[in-house]
Every structure is written in structure tokens, then in C-alpha cells.
Image (cartoon, rainbow, N blue to C red; front, side):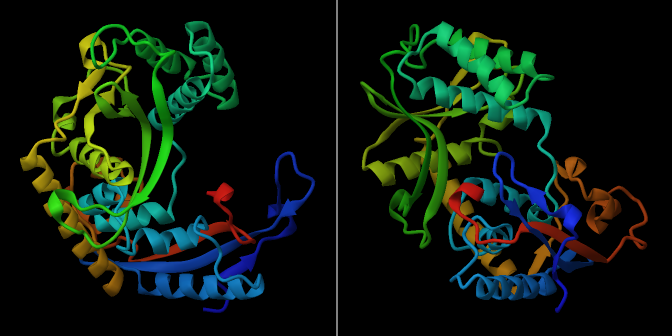
Length: 358
């Protein structure tokens, strides 16, 4: 379609903070269609491919970069790799997963507090001084940097809860001597239970500790209150933690001894470090079966460009539920007048993206 890339008026050309140059923004335009609980994204994919081709030619580049928003949409629905977050979101509702890539919401409070806590932990463990005084200094600095003034109390609750937690191996934690790697990105091929899944796995882990017993993976989960037992099982965080075990073992060639869910916001001190049941052959077999089914379903959706709307427990928090025929029908509401053709507009920088733009 001819006009799906259009440079915005001068008033929409944004100046990059701290830099003298300006970066133009272009709008990508397309549409998706919904009918009988199915999102048809055929037009969308044609327009994305056309846009990327046109822009790549303009910049004399092979492509627009992995982190370009439109390239990300193609990659994240390709079925060419496994990602725990992708798998969970897609399998709950394929249409919701796609639409979530098209209509990005502002980060919610819990997520933003979580991101700030992660930033604090990364700075703390990457520093040479690991004292409470230094942790407090990093916390204050990060709250200012992340503009978390309204949620500072929530951030402090998690930081204090973390510092007050025991070592997951028992006794007080010796932060100074702890050997850690933080915010680890892994792209690796896995063979869980001896099965080659056929595509690489992409993982980003919060922390890997090298302890006297071997490798231990730590994943931070923020949220005030004791962890919900339901979320600790196979329908919650457990599959993600099993992926961390598989990924770390494939990448480093060592057995992961423990995978720990760090819940610094828990009221009960003993629940601030929860050891996950990642060594269970029964649970690993279930995750492997889910993985193979996921790859089959996401590849079929990409080939047909048709994404099914599924009613599930998280529908109430979906930001497009009032335009979803499936959700309205589940609530006994009239879905006949729901907009069947949904226009798509995505602002992107008029450039080839780099890793720093991701």
C-alpha cells in the first residue's frame, strides 16, 4: 500500500535528549481484521514486509536492524526461536500476543518498580563495594534516575526485604564474597531430556551465582506479599525456571544445582527465597511437550497470518478487551457492532536501528 509510511509534520520531529541532531519519525500504517474469534493479519504482514524493504533500500542497508519495532513483530511471531515470555503470552491468547506488539501500553506500576529493583541489584552486584551503605546510595541514585518518586516506598520495601533475607543456602548472605553474573542474555541450542527442539532459545536471566555447590540461577519477582502457591507451580513461574535451567546448562556445560525465585516483597522471611522444582522429570517432560506444541502453533499462525482469540483468566486486564468479540461474547454482551477492521499506526524512527535502540 502506497501511503503506509509517511513522515510526520515538523512538529512531530523529535529532538533526542542531550544530542544536537534531530531524528525524524515516520508512521507505519496498516490494518488487521477480526471475525469469529480470529484476527486476520494478512494485510499487516504484507505492509510490514513492504515497509522494511522500502526503508532498507532508502538507507542502502540489508535490513532495518533486529530491534526495529516492525522487524521485532516479524521475529517474535516467526517460531524461529523459543523465548519463555513469548511462549507464555502466545499460548494464553495468540491474538492478544500479536495485538500486544501493535498497541504498546505504558509500563504499569508493578513493572516499573520491578525494573528499578532490577537496576539496583545489577549496579550493586557489579560494584566493588557491597555494603548496606552502598546499597542505600545506589537505591537513592536509581530512584532519581528512574523517576520513581511516587513509588519510592515500594522500591525501598523490596530493597530492605532483600537485604534482610537469608542466603538461600542457609545462614546470612555474604554479599561481598558472592560470585555473580547479572542480566545475562543467552542464545543457545538446547536438548532437554535428549530432545533437539530444532530452534535456538533466547533467554535473559537476572542472575547466575557461582557457589560451592555449583551454578545457581536467581530470578527476581517483585510484588508485595507472600508468593501465591499457584504461581510457583506448572501454571505459573515453574516452566520459565525450567527454561533457565536448560539454557544455563546448555550455555555453560554445567549442571544447575538450584533455581531460586527471589521474592523480596514477601512478608514471611522464609518465603523470600523459594527453590523451584526444576529437577522434576515429570515437570520437565510437561514443559518439553508444551514447547513442541507451541512451536507448531506459532508457526501455523505465522504461515496463515491468522491468530486465534482465546478467553482466559487475564482477559480482564487486556487493554483492547472492549474491541474483542471473544471477550464480549464471554460476558454475554453484544459483539455484533464491534469494529471488525482495526487500523494500525506505529511510530518508528526514520533510521536503521542498532542494539542500543532496543
